[in-house]
Each structure stands twice: as C-alpha cells, then as structure tokens.
Image 1: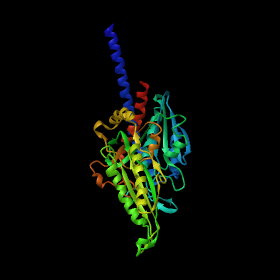
Image 2 (image 1 turned 30 degrees about the vertical axis):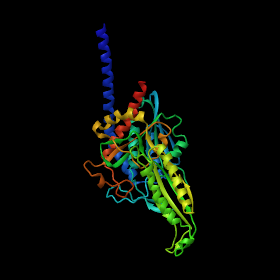
Image 3 (image 1 turned 90 degrees about the vertical axis):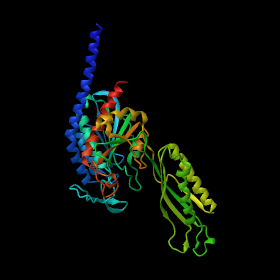
Image 4 (image 1 turned 135 degrees about the vertical axis):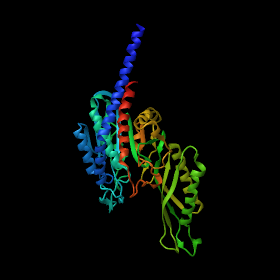
Amino acid sequence: MKKILGLAFALFLSGIQLNAQSKEAQIQASVKEIEQKVIDWRRDIHQNPELGNREVRTAALVARHLETLGIEVTTNVAVTGVVGVLKGGRPGPVIALRADMDALPVQEINELPFASTTKAMYNGEETYVMHACGHDSHVAILMGVAEILSGMKEELKGTVKFIFQPAEEGAPKGEEGGAELMVKEGVLKNPDVDVIFGLHSIAQIEVGKIAYRPGGMMAGVSDMKITIKGKSSHGAEPWFSVDPIVTAAQIVNNLQTIVSRNLNVTENAAVVTIGAIQGGNRSNIIPGQVEMLGTVRTLSDSDEKLIYERIRQIVTHTAESNGAEAKLELPFSSRFPVTFNDLDLTAKMLPTLEKSAGKSNVIVIPADTGAEDFSFFANEVPGFYFYIGGMPKGQDPKTSGPHHTPEFFLDESGFITGINAMVNLVVDYMELEGQQ
C-alpha cells in the first residue's frame, strides 16, 4: 500500500512538473511570436516622440491596444497616463507593471530609418524631441506583455494592473506629473496593488543580460537653491562690501567635505553638486546677491537626513562667518525618494530573472546615482526594478551612446529579454503566492 501511495505521489509531482514545463514552453513561444510586433511598436513610438504630460498619441496607441485585448482601460490618469486592469480567471494577488512613456528635448543624430525629426514646444521654445532614454522600448515591451498575459487570462491566479506613466523625466514648469501624481490620484488602489515590477533598457549593458541590486538601486534626489545676500560695493573697494561671491565660493568648497568627511562611503555613495551660480554683471562691481542651484543624491533615508542637516549647517554658518545672510531651499522644486528594491521580493523573484535570461546573464550591479520616479510606487508597495541590456554584444560600453544624448541607441534584440522577464514575474509571483 505504501508503495502504491508513494507511486501515486510521485506521479502527482511529475504531473505538476510537466504542467510547469508546458506553461514555460507556452510562454517562450508567445514571447518569440510577439517579438517583431514589439519592435514595430517601438519604432513607431520612437518616430513619434512626445514630451512629458503631452503623450497624447502614445497614450491613444496604448489604450486602443489594451481595449482590443479586452482589458479594462482608464485614460487621462495623471494628465495623459493609461491604466489597464486584467482580471485573471482565478483569485490571487494584484500585480502592477509599469512603463514610462515620455521623451526628451534632444535632437537625434542616429542614421535610422525611424529616427525622430519631431519638434515640440518645451518651456516656451520650439525644440527637437527624441526618445533618448529608452521609454519607447518600455511602452512597446509592456504592450507585448499585456497581449501575452491576456491570452493566458483564464490561467492567471490574480489580477494584473498595467501602468503606462507620463512625465517620468519631469512635468513641464507649473504642472504636476509622473509617478508622484499617479500615486496621488490612486493608481495603486481599486484594486489595491500588492507588488509592482518595472524595468529600464540600458545602452551600456549587453543585450540578453539583466542587472539588478537589492535595496537601494537608484538614488533619491532633491534639488536645492541657495541665496546669499551680502552688501554691494565697487570692486576697487572690497572692504566696504559683504562679498556674496567669496561666500558662495567658500560654501561650494565646504559642501564637498560632507561626502568625504561625514558619510560612511563604504556603505553607500552620495553626491552633493552645485551646478549653477548666478551673481554679478561687471568685473568691477561686487554684487549684493548670489544664487546657486545644486543637486543632492543619496541611497538611504538616513544618509539623506544626515546630508540635509550638514548642508543647512554649512550654508548658514559659512554665510554668518562672513557677515552675510543665506537662505537654503532644500528640496527646492522636486524630490524623488530612493528607488528601493524590496529585499524579500527581490530574493523571491531572483530565480525568475535567472530563468528568463539564464543564470550567468543576471548580474548584481553597484548602486546608480541617477534617479527614477518609480520610487514613488515602490514607496507605497513592495517593488522590484531592474535593467535589461540594450547594447550590441561585444561593444565597449564607453563607445555606446549615453542616455539623454543625441547618440543614444538601443539594440532591439534585447527587448525579448524584457518581455520574457515581465511575463514570468507575473506568472511566477502568482504561483508562489498561491502556494502560501
């Protein structure tokens, strides 16, 4: 009897394994079948780029596609965003997948048949527009993922929420936008999202590879404005002045000691940069005021708190020591939290990434001091954000066109890795949650 029961149990496990293998084969076939459609969508979007909060054509393309798949669609979310909800045939978790849609005010110089020649108004001036950061690929990949998952609807053990987000690069002056506004408008509610996944194509990582980091993946970022008020004087008589330019120079130098002397750089990197100084208009006049703009980037909330406090101390006391007054605005106009990969979720889904790209092609990378507003989503629910390669195999990353430049280029053969990973993350997470 024990032998019979043991045989029955072995056959049961074998059946589960065969079903799993069958599902994997089904997904692989679907991914391969849709690859060219994803490339075609990407080329169309690349040739017709739109700036943040102006993604009208892109949003319409996405909405039409989701509707043809029978997905419940909501438009005009956070200005031009699109949200689709796909309810699976069985109960389970709600998983959000995010793609950003906006382009940049950059003139493309790549010789591609689908290169952008589009112009648009940006901050009151006409400018060329280009998808110089890969958001066109993100949209196309998620459109493909939506098509594959909708074809598996009855097998899905849960709900998928597709979030097509505008204005990741920032909203126009005087407007709100991006992930922060989507969260404010309740995009993670009704139905309530349990976890969220996001990806980014990277032009300095080889196609076929996936890169990730547990914990702080990308920096939190804030801009700052420092206004120094002194006393004007003739440049020939500096003793009658309270020189805001000298004070500004001392503040810039002193700020550099924060990272080098106050931060434990063996744990996390950080950046304190002054990027603009405005003061005076003649060589022989000491002005009464100087303004500086800068950026602060950190990889943990505790580091941000420490650096903010040190900046306040340095700005205030350096100015006081010179008899000047200083006003610090930090954050000045925007703040993005750290893009933090939930540790438990990352560990749980790592095997899925390894299955999707091959274990040797999944790499852990150092933290990035760039910023991403995916962080607003991951601040609300557990999130996992990763990179997919977009650089041709064998190319030196130093020769690959950097993001946000006219030379930016993606090898489209890398898109299939993103499609595969996103579909597998949804299916595997639903299976893992169902086993608990």
